[in-house]
Length: 357
Image (cartoon, rainbow, N blue to C red; front, side, top):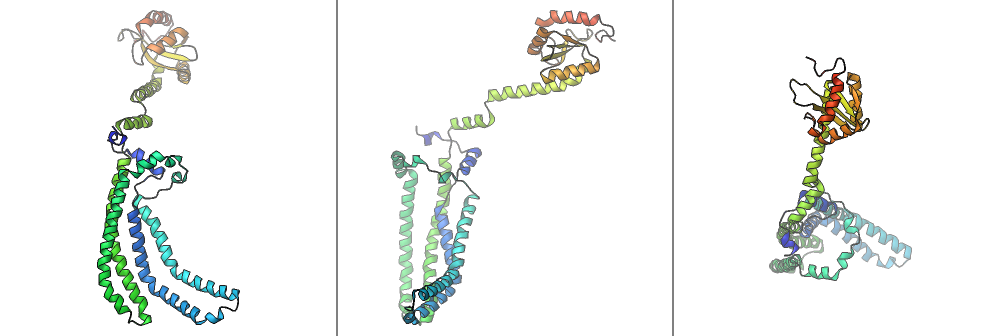
């Protein structure tokens, strides 16, 4: 089974975001072309008369002063620069509008996408096998069909438009030179808007297809979905263990408030600390009130000294209780003999809490 067939799951938001960072988004060249030509026609319609006037005036000057242009090379360059600068300033709004539309079109389609990844050299593109795969890919087949259909539509539209324009072109031969710019503009606009209608259809299809194709290319297999989940969220077993450890740590921290009610603190003496309590009337065995290691153990011992709770150094017992016991749970059976010896010592102390009413 091919990779494409295996990839039955839609792309996750994380994968789409990572692809976007690399500049991989759904692109529609047809929509960009449509908007650029539309912008050209609209701005040209507004500025055609000004462009034609400046062009005609300078053409008339150059033709009328052709005999003076041979005076010197400097004179020729000065006049040429003057004419070119005026024509460029006249065409500047058209060029500016095209640049602005190119930027806005990309923002309209995909929003802001800034990535240097496409500019980096990728030697995989030089692989002849991959090149052949791209040549005979589904995307290339659709592109060929799209070009053929678009070319056929262009040909049909031009045929019918030119049929209606032939009489107008013949009539323009009898027009005065002053009316030629306006007549030419009207003919150009009629052809342009007719072709624009075809491009609008092509752009609508291209938007739909480019998004479908991009979604297909971004699809993931179930294994990829699981791997991504593990990378981002962690393995379920590891995550469960981590959550359990966090809950245990929070439980140990919350138990610090009970240190003052303990009968004794069993210590390592510095690395482990376990607080025990025993009330014969209500308990069948001593209960672990709090316990911890490292800084938490030191905190337990500090609180015990502040509250007047005895601190007893029993390293093996402290490590065993910390390893086997649970907070608010009874001591393990394996520790009962050693704990009983501790409580015989506690009971011998005056003012102990064990037998207090």
